[in-house]
Amino acid sequence: MVSIYGLKDIDLKSIISFIVTMETGSQYNASRLLGCSVATISHNIKRTQLYYGTPLFIREGRRLTPTKDAVLLKAELKSCLLQLSSVLCKEND
Image 1 (cartoon, rainbow, N blue to C red):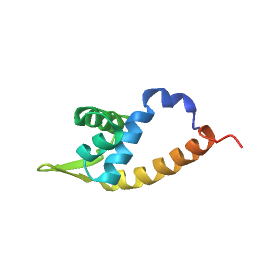
Image 2: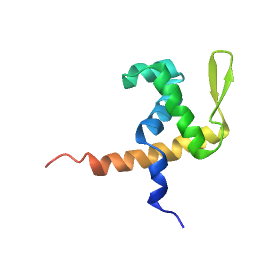
Image 3: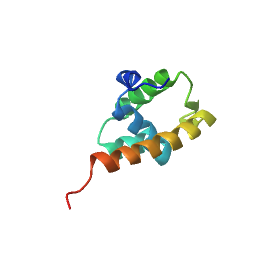
Image 4: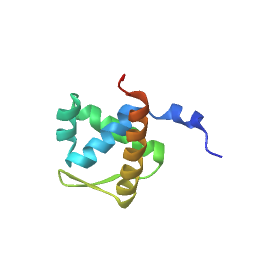
């Protein structure tokens, strides 16, 4: 059975860092967009990897290549966050 109580072990900033890194192609670009350091992005991605228990990127020199799991996870997480955003950020009519 799925429970919301497991969410206590992950935070939205970590998930957002992962998604933005996937979309921009680098931790540096993600850090610029999110207004934080590359070290913070790296830390957040590590938290996301630990939470899901699977590698999300493979380091190839200075480049991070997303794994197949990362590609699938990013699509699911982004869809969920867009739905959450539409509920939490409703504009007053």
